[in-house]
Image (tube, rainbow, N blue to C red; front, side):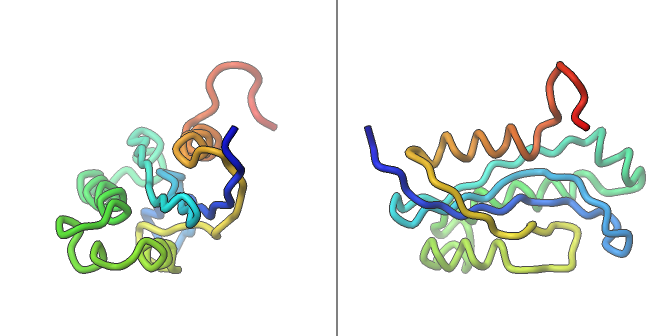
Length: 136
């Protein structure tokens, strides 16, 4: 059984009208130093976004969201930020911003497999609850 490793993560938020401070969660960025792991998953719930801001440019937001996993992967295709070491890319991605795409606070956890932890966080923090009792 693999040892537990610490990781840091932040939830990606879409804030269509920054002045209103309303947002929907659209992804998670997870960084695990000991496993040399930096990745993000994004899933934009367009229906929820349009309910919050009917006039928002969904294609523009989707394009920006899709860039985040590329920045995590790094390399030339990710531009100048993609050339930075993983730790610096993570800190750049989670830096506070007052734009339509923001990240929540950075939190920490322990995991054996960062990929599974990322999927768990997506299920818990981004995807709507499926079936069962409503959350209260």
